Amino acid sequence: MLRLRACALFLLSFTLLFCLSCQAAAKELSYDWPFSASPQQVIDSLQTQHAADLPDSIAYEHHLILAKAHYFNAFQENRPDETKQADLQAAHAAIQNAMAYHKTPTARAFECLIMLEENHFLSLKDASLNFDMCKKELEDILRTDAMDFIANIAYGQLAYEVRQIQGFRRFLAKIFYTPLADDVNYETALLYFLQAKYLQPSPVVFYQLARAYFALGNHRDALLSIKTCVATTPERPYIDLYYQHLAEQAQNTYNTNH
Image (cartoon, rainbow, N blue to C red; front, side):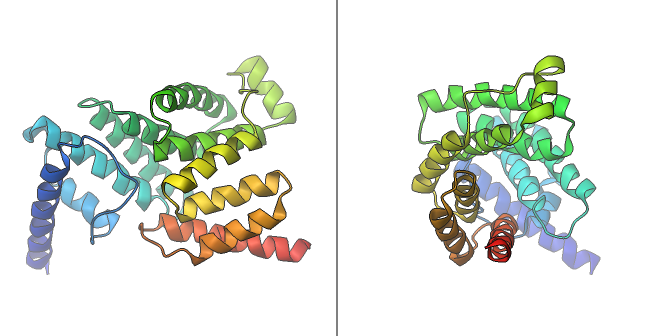
């Protein structure tokens, strides 16, 4: 069994190296998952390789794929929060390693997307600082490329979650930590989620659209977004099903309350 597993890892490593060499010229990060292997299998395979021994362009892709594998892996359901947080931290470390080679706009946006997920485990002090850093970073990216899918979905999520923090917690952030932006709201979130839908419709986009529509009192379009989210064929490991299950929960909550 150990020999078979070693052979499988070798074949997967060879396949990954081939994919890395094909993608290296683009120096970009997509939201898709081009592998038949699971994120954990990809992680195991990449960890047998030493990025320092690879050409810079391939080492960059090595870290990008490792970051994406850890990010998707974090969305497995029924996992302890500590395990999800560990995957997000590993994804964050990998994307920072990638940007040591090439600091592309999409890689910067993906770092913000990871940070927004990490915020769910952080104190208000640390989360408010992350919001401030990511807002500046994403606005800089979107000024030069308004069609960056990851930047659009991340900025929409940031706008929604910043608007969610109100009352005493917002006052605390303003007085003691990093003030939360007043120029983003649910309308801002909706605008960027609609742009993300135009660029790459996916379960995460439809679920986020539903949240924004509900927050704005537009139940008709919220329910339509939930229906579309659930009906969309999952293409990415774990994360698509994760958001589809959240959409189903939102539908059940709505049915219970109305």
